Image (cartoon, rainbow, N blue to C red; front, top):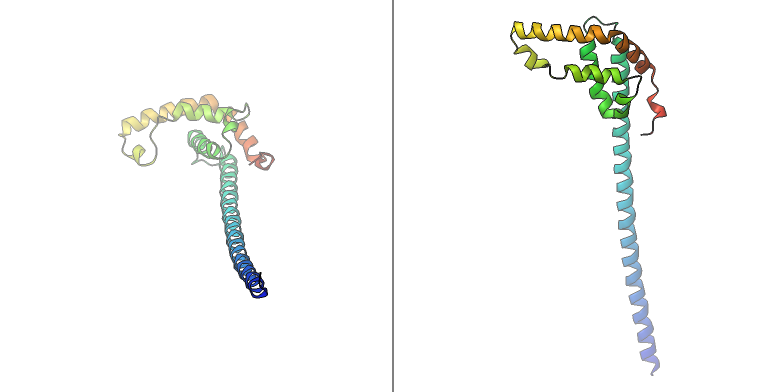
Length: 161
């Protein structure tokens, strides 16, 4: 083999190596950029999750503290709101002995229309539902008060998220 051919093959190997090196570096940068973007998206999602979780916890604490202390908040409404919040945050608490009364009141009154549907009812039908709510509230008032006090002090941070 001639020396010129050897030099040409060496040069060809160097060119191929340089091209491969540029390709590898470019591909590595794309992979790194993709990973960085994924980390940012995960961090954003975690932040949104934490904010939503904090909002739910604060809402549960506010409503729990208002039970029995706010004349406008009935036991029925409190149980409806707390059930919705707990279903989003910690549904297992609705089965817990300390808090199951909240779900019990909710289940007994969930058929009662709310918001705009309530406004559409006749006075007679509203009165019938109010009577039904009063009966349920009288039956469970003491237990709901206890559950609400416990829930107002409950440390949701001890739960795994």
